[in-house]
Image 1: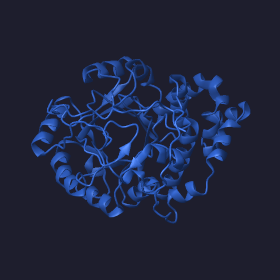
Image 2 (image 1 turned 30 degrees about the horizontal axis):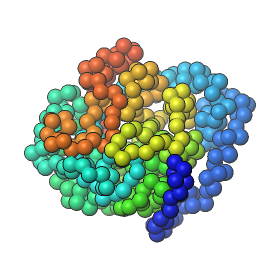
Image 3 (image 1 turned 180 degrees about the vertical axis):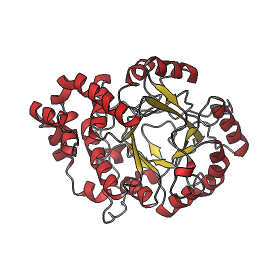
Image 4 (image 1 turned 90 degrees about the vertical axis):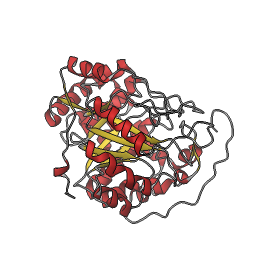
Length: 391
């Protein structure tokens, strides 16, 4: 049932589980059992987790449980301390560059969904050059390339655009459709530093309810993408769930299992997590599981306590007020003055639709001032190509 309306779930043939890939863990794990794991946590479990210096997934379950809510201030305080110890008094800024809103997927929560009657645009080199110039003029040195998922915007396009864009930025990451391991290796060879692949939700039935057509409806193929990224030796791997599609605690607990799985196998890579909440978009949905601001703070603090080396990113999906108070909470990176439609920075979008509405629309200078008011320094560059293993 979705919003009281009976829906037929079209179960597509899935990619087979490959040995030692995370899909194997998901196939053998009962969602309800994972849910009971955090629901059963007590005050004693929370206190035990707070007293440990190295946490297990079971400790993370305690910290995101309702039993941990009375200890939120202690969690946030410890999160701030651990972040300062590990990353110093800094916060780096990045910008997403949307190269295309063309998409062959049907996803219920996304403005790029193929059934939406919107203006489609894929940027050419001239348009990308204008976007790069506009982004660089704001001071950014870390960029995230984003596209819809379609065969028309795939490896040939990426192999043209990455060498064109990379010379202008110290760090270049991408958030596009999942690729094969050899394709990730090829892109790394021409300048790719990091890849973000958000699973959206780890519950297969819910995933299929919201991914109705296109390659993204292949649950296992997306689920195993971070393994392929790790096998390719990509420097940074980013994980995330779309908070609102399913129970946020269970999805987050599954992502903690995923992170530990990847860290054990691809220990040379850095890892990041993000906390996107469902935002309004063309043809969007009402969230199934609403996570409040207070609960999101709890989740953020729990992640930092769970892994002090983890990079944590906060996007402009969140409100200026929330981002103001979250600066010291445990984040290492934050987007600023984001445009979520192709051509948005150079105003060359030709009315192309944005992927979702942003909430924090402040200019970069305002974001910088806010960060400094919180006693932190703004960092534009936190990585150099000379440090990459493939150089």
